[in-house]
Length: 521
Image (cartoon, rainbow, N blue to C red):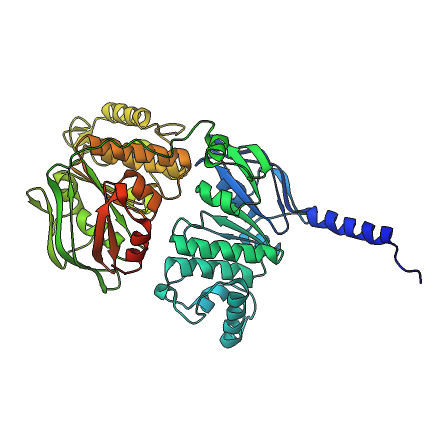
């Protein structure tokens, strides 16, 4: 038997490098149509082993459609998918996971009353008759340790933070043998610390040969974590697999939207006016009947934006709901000018002068089964000129909705398009157009730019600043510290249902805010 020569070893190494460079996933000439929309227009995309490939684009650019095809939720009208060089037929999420592809969505699909392990094994074919829960818990613990996804296998989902729930979703896919993970806006619900922990996990996974498709609108994250970037516009790929090395946020933004984005918004200096919202020692319970707000007090004045910073689950949702009439107050008082808002209905509170941009756009903010026009007139259909006696003047309703679509630059095929089919940025514009057009004295905006691309984020933030300049008081609840610093006049930190400190935004100490978010004054 002859000894291998240097040439043989070189050829073998070259062959191994070639195999390693072959795409794990190839999507070729993918076409997907929806009524009135060409969502994917002959899209090519590839993913290599051991890489994080970022997928960028404005809301509605076709990113989610493309990844939903890969994850088995949609079937492409045209095109082919290859897994490790072999043509694949993916017609369902079960097919996708059989090919080693798993997707983690923004909205988690977990059963709160079940444990971590029970959620992870839910729906598996094996074992069919005898469930060995301790063995499953052991395997979950092993995966948790292997990838740095710290979570208690026996904890119930309702006991976990949002970041921990995301870890469960990732573990669910790893438990099923996923080698390719698709993450859709994974940091949208995470604190900065949790985001850094997620990035460390993703690097650990790629170092072990797994691959990641990373969808995000946070350009800083893309520059930090991505090996390659593919950019989409209006269903087409405009930049395929480029390296982000040496790029800036502006470079990425220009590829996404085709123009310069203003990251430092111009905020006019304004003297705060009279107190519009006065929340005094309010107590309220959460959905489980436990204390959510504990003697919480704050004030918001005309011509100012008060930003509320805090880790998710510290009473932000309940605060917005007690102000807008969606949750009862146990004790304390909420006043809008001379009006007491306690025990009033949401409709009464709106009529008094409160607008609301809820965090759940489609569930709470919109009637997703209705068209754009009906959603735009929801606040005003009982009042003239839209109301004509007990009927609706549809000619006026159409004119009002067309005017709002133009004024707020809502991208929709028509006013008769079902609002649930619009992109995230455009659904948010529908809500803002409806709420702002009524000229409220107080606007409660909860995560108004979560999940939006840089162009839509810029547009929403400008709308908030315009309302401030026109005399409105704005309560802005956000987990994005950069956003709070950019648009707020004051920042108050909420922890465990209480405001534990506040400071002017213009000279805010981010480190101090971070400590207060963790409960240290």
